Image (cartoon, rainbow, N blue to C red; front, side, top):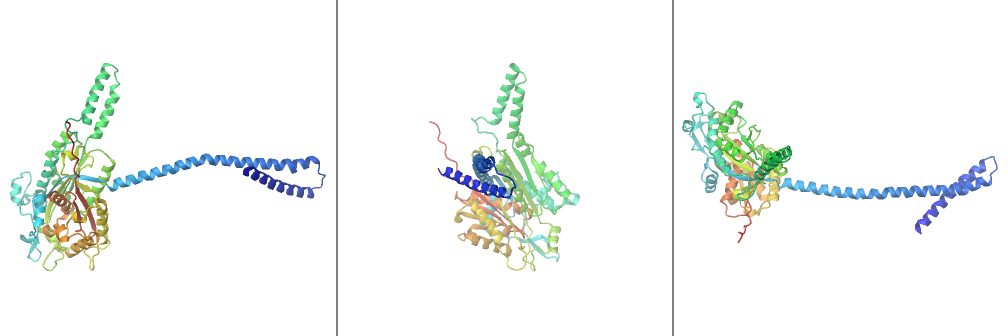
Length: 519
């Protein structure tokens, strides 16, 4: 009824307008108006205009009605897209890797467990070096690895030449001597890692091989040529399941290019166990990455990219990371003093020359049956990096805003109880680094006891150079292994750099549910 009244009202309005216009035209026209003009212009024309307008309105409504369905579908599609983007962001946020093995060679120990125990016991500090002096002829404080006697080590490695006979510089040779033990220690762990399924289960590789054999036999016996596409598809599938191996070596950036190349060649010659493992699991040939970095903390940006890629790609992959440096060298000490960064009696805000090496072996988070093969693996969460605007070496008060923000983000991701938190930092004797670290921890985790839960590696080992990129993380893994609390979380905190700040969280592998044996 309402629609009829609206139509009649519309017709009345149109008729009124038509009549007014028509009567005005007739009044100005100089001709007689007949009955035909009256019927057509006063009756038929208003009726046709009303019907035409009503038809147009009806057509517009019909066109709008179907458009509402795609609009609803578009809304649903946008919701689904938002959910997918949210899930992807969450997956990137939770990206992680498994630390299968860690190894160090430091002034406080030749392995991670010994080094951690020595640091907890205390008492080890840099000491005056009997062989090195500064530009004034005074002995300098160093953190030297006492086990490294270069002459003895070179006697056991005939492939290398003594520096006096035209060989590599002493600092480079000391670095090779430092990295040798950590390299072999992580390779020993890698040797027990397999990419196939446990005994009793059919592996994808063996299943594919069996299907290929059967398909080839069937093709030869019955339909010649049919087996060829099947073989190609299976080869592509098997190729996608082959593990990848990446070796990242971090040499000091101040080395000469020729020294880095020679050191890399020697390191590769020590990786026979790696090549044997590659052949055993049918992995791709190792990819070596040796580009130097402007600062050691930049390594964690590379690791972060690896973790993000692993979150997207299911292919098994291992990442072997090595970092080594040695400042126990006369030329290096002279350089540090020349630029005002050497610790002396007159300049106690300088750095103490140290040396060390570290290695980490990381595996893809979806490596097949890793919990059964490596139950002591540690979960390494995505690192969080920040950069200070003001240098930590500048005069005046050193704020902790950047480090506080980084720590907050890390603790929000791993959500550990503060009483179960362990902090392993590369902070040394300098008040600027220690003050920044403790102030940030006081603001983020006020319940934390700095004397019991914070370990400063640099206080005992001095400046480790580029090796500091891995040492706190390796020692954090050792701390978790030595802890009797399953819910503990360790954070490796990097504050040595004047600007860069990095925090890495690690946690133990969660216990696997017991499997009931069949009766």
